Length: 559
Ligand code: NOJ
Ligand code: CA
Image (cartoon, rainbow, N blue to C red; front, side, top):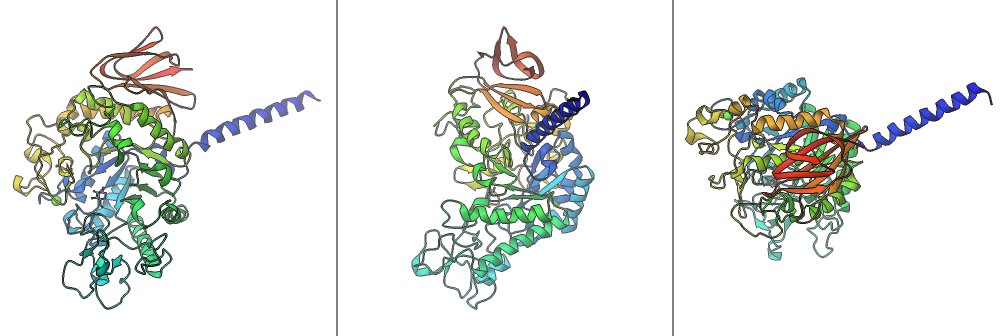
């Protein structure tokens, strides 16, 4: 063979190898909008973010006015809790009109403007899609309750009163229909009827998912999504995404439903995202969601990592949380569960472990700032899409004594404790509003030591600037990217620290977390020539990683 032929074969082989290497790396990046690969979300509870017109309630122009701040934190996307017209029995999760912004937040035009201003900054805006239920004041429900058959008669699940179906409710008002309806959450949130996957043949009110009324409902949901996407929204966080179809034991029917919506997104809105409140990524992501939350419900996820075991009131100290000063947590159980979801979804979508949300206590509950920093060091270096709940970036307190408003109290959790106005400065009402204090949506944190954004802005060592530093690191290092590889290196029951490796494009980063009040050390061979990137109280010495009490380390390492 001639020399030049050998050379071209060698060249081809190298080329193929390179293409394959790139392809295999690309294969790990989930399909969907490219912007998700670098997305960092900030959740805004609109009532409490910034009041632009002095009526005591946060609003859409208020969010627009704070986009630069949100971007300065390092976030490039926002999720806003429901902003639709509502009687606000459940903070807006009881929608009266899905096509209209609630006047207290502004107008549809204000939302359009918010989206446009976000886009100018390269940011994205996701709305909350309350897909499973409406308010009892929604006109669809009001018409459904009429005796006279009409388009909406079967849009809700009506059960014969004599059957007294569990949870069923009588219509609250003066209507002819004597049946009772099934709610989806609170009794005033009647479930929309997407049908039953396996209707009981003896119960004719259980309609199959193919019933024209159920198809009408699912088409209406599509219309709602189209309406807001066309106005400028970039996607939705779907409330109780798992809940739409009843008697669906293996999630087959609900998965098929979301699959359809996703196929439509891929076709018509390929840059838009679907984020689920499902808390079962292994089910939600194959069903078509781009992102699923891992933390909102369930002991294995929430309890083992952040609470409720670490609450200062000492309730039900079942398994200890990992982020508990006293130790005794079980990160192994958490990670085993996480890996079950991660390994089957990493090439298809993202898992998010949020810092908190409007339903949970804030991470500051019962913890000092250093402890909260160890939480952030972990959550903002894990794979998936980070979500920061407004105010967590400055360490706002969870305030369980906050008065109850808009359905905040749920079982034993006062959700209003995490819904108090954002603290912007040391000005009147912490800079949230110019209204008189009694007019505010909820009272401001009364404590002298309440944190605020303006003061922290000036302090290089503040929680705000720490959050920024973490997010800068995440942005600047391929190994910390949303889709970069994750591998636990040390995750043991009742043993610390928790250590993991992130890697991509030949870069390797080790993260080590010790949330306890005790120092700890482990042998770690994987860490050649460690370079500290962001460290507090962690050091490599003679092949061992040594950690102070309440410490973390983020190190670049060689192979
Ligand atoms: C989950 C939401 O996060 C919560 O705030 C709401 O109360 C229920 N779904 C009902 O919509
Ligand atoms: Ca206002």
